[in-house]
Length: 205
Image (tube, rainbow, N blue to C red; front, side, top):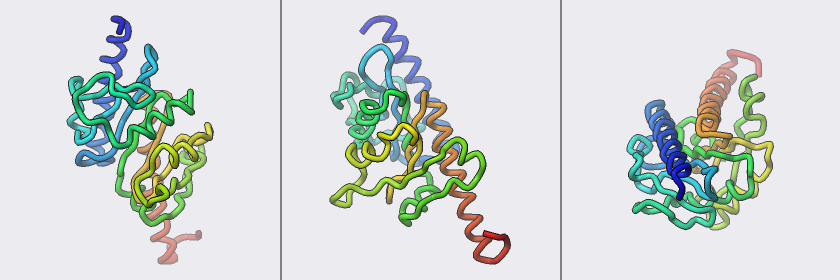
């Protein structure tokens, strides 16, 4: 790869590391679950967190580079089990430059209940709009490229809940994508409080 590409890889690894720490420190993702990736402009490839590495453990040395067919170009780690839906989104959505997938507790609670999460605040309506629930795979396992791609091929969708799994946010860069999953989590928390207050007759539905 050219020096220009090497510079981009380094800069985007640093950006991914910063977003990973932000997610960890704000409680969006603990342990080694979830995933982060960012598209490269200099080559048809992405940088992605490897499997078994926590968001707060990402480093320039352990982040992996994969092509859009899922082949590892750089990195000695094990490719993420979510790699297939990441590369699928980059293939079908030219506007997607970064993906953040987390198991944030409030939003994942809604997803595990199989409940639609409505965008009830003004900000959520403006910034998220549609917030679909992506079903499990046909065999009841985690969502893959087929399930995620079928829902998020729609360019109007930049956020989704993943049934029994977590949330996903996409954007033009990592910062925008992490803002999406933060807003999903905030919305899930607010919706739960609203539902609880309504059940006690504290406010009008």
